[in-house]
Length: 483
Image (tube, rainbow, N blue to C red):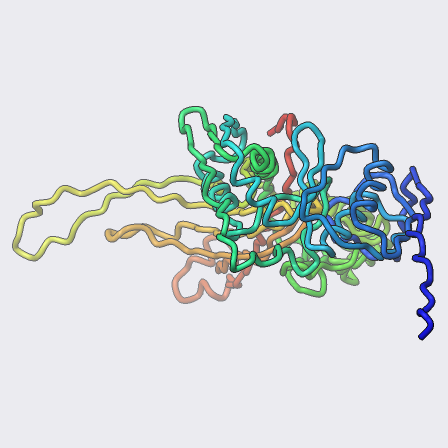
């Protein structure tokens, strides 16, 4: 029988390489990469067809100018088309597809081998120690996290990181399972973390290859906690006087102002409604209005566009509002700050004495704070906005009895999200005072029985609103807080 024709083996295809030294600008519609930071390494256009993996690695070494060493287990072939990708990311994906990984030492040399061999290499490395000072966080708290990171690897799998920011294996980050026939190499638990409380310092002991990674975790976690300066302005507004002027306002309804987190009114919505008398006061000189007040308030609301601060300032200029206090404080992120404006009253607490007995216990002096208490817990978001949990309490002294003072209390709680330097308003703390006034002709109004013929009695109700304006500001590093 004739011998079968043997076709000559096709030569190994030569990779087609088009280096792209400058990274092109990503389009807005392009999908996000699976990496926290996009690689800045030179990009390549390359295609491999059944190319031995050692030749592929040699090509990447030539293209990048880096020294790459391959282990004995690096075998197989590669078929891939990589258009315009950073060379380090492309190499990482090729290694992942072949069950390989890479580590880079302190000299910049890259070693490629199987996960098991790299794990054994890490396990054989000597342990070294480094003293790492901690600036902002507590070293004892960081130590707990670092111990978990050091122990967070599985037996038989190396903690080796791919070179130059390469991603973990595509199946979710787990390395290939170790061969059950081979003894497991445990690379976990070798490192230790000690804490020096006096100097707030960490002493980290770990293998040579893993120590830089652990130190980098410390740098990432040891961040300055944002500080927030909080200024409050407590204003009492005479609602009765403003209504007599023809103005009505509402800062508490959801249709005009924001009271819940994320539910914010759009800019341009009027939060002050002008009554008909206010406009009539502009043209009708016979009405008993203070023209200055009417014109000022109308200008700040209707003509000048609504501005709440300008509205409050106009009320103050016409003696329709009074600034009770302007406390300020500074706190760190997620820590509660307390502001108080008021007085501390002292009173005697006398224990009850049964009938027929002598008082054996001396009265005790007690003190009670009466006024306005404001509790603010700020949180700085990633986009430099400030979420605040605000609790305001108003206490007023009614009278004092033998059992102690009687206190009236009003409280309001809000959650708001504001920009840096923006003002949030707390309303709803309204006091109503009802008084009876008797007027009439002097002397005659006091004559028994017939005095009521020369006098009249009327009930007067006055309302006073308490508005609390809270303005948070993020204090950047090095900034001086002015109070």
